[in-house]
Length: 76
Image (cartoon, rainbow, N blue to C red):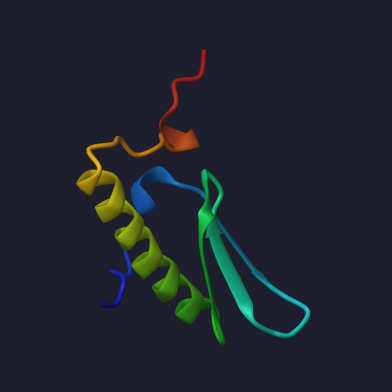
């Protein structure tokens, strides 16, 4: 499954960077256990999408709500 190019990640913040070995690492800031890596930024994001979709399935199967993305929190 490839991630849709316009996928908005449900408001979650993505960090994407290149490590010392030259791999690209991507993770969701609000979900620190959801991360992935790849040889290119696109590959890392595709893998992150797979991990994110799997995490959502687990939350739903357990009847739990997903953590709220920072961008969706009301600022007062």
